[in-house]
Amino acid sequence: MALSILFILSGIAAVLWGANLFTDGAADIARRFRVPQMVIGMTVVALGTSLPEFCVSFASALKGAADIAVGNVVGSNTFNALLITGAAAAVAPITVMRGSLARDIPQALISAVLLAALCMDRDVTRLDGALLMTVFIVFMAYTMRAPRSETKEETEPARLGTWRCILYIIIGLAALVAGSSYFVDGASDVARRLGVSDAIVGLTIAAAGTGLPELATSVVAARKRQSGLALGNVIGSNVFNSLMVIGVTGIVCPMQTNGIAATDFVVLVGSTLLLWGMAFTKRRIERWEGGGLILLYAAYTAWLVWQAAT
Image (tube, rainbow, N blue to C red):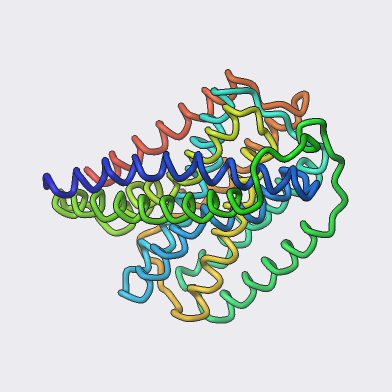
């Protein structure tokens, strides 16, 4: 138990350190190549911070723990939409671009609805996985080709040298993945010692652990007044998780999900809808709205814990 707690603490420290390096490098790439931060957030940063979810879900499916694999994605996406967005907005109000309202957030919503629909029969087949991957490829192509209006923040001059920027991204990404792995190993061991089910482990412990990169990256980006990177990371990660992670995993290893309740998918879709609705109000997510999202996630987690205890 002591070793598991050490894994948890060291994992958190590594994730926070890696997120700072990764954010600096990714933001500088946006400035150097005049690419809007929202695009960088939804592609490069989202892919990097979604790697822990992919590794955990893929490995879990191969080991026959499908509930952890799918629960990890459902829980992580809910964690992203509520806790991460809430924490980032609490640090600094998030400005939402018009394109995000019309294109990016709807992509996350469609991804959540499609994942929920395919999992309703409690069976993720290779055909389901192929469909998710097809939609993912279409969304990524659309994201890269869609025109973006640049803000003053997105046209600032680059501050880091090219090689230093690349080094920051590589080291930061390595720390993110390693730190998340340590956290999940330690937290999962503690949970199993307490007799918690695979579904609850996936929705809570694994989701929080693999969601740490998104949390750290978005909060750091918000603190540095890089709203596009903070929100793009959340939206992009949810799209990657729902479509790419479950898509690839389902193609390689079809899964049966018996422990993930319909309520969990309702919360996933509802949290994305709520995020979209908040973004419509003055195209900003204010600090008090961020606090509300955090409270909602706390209530959902408390409900999961109560369900596990009864």
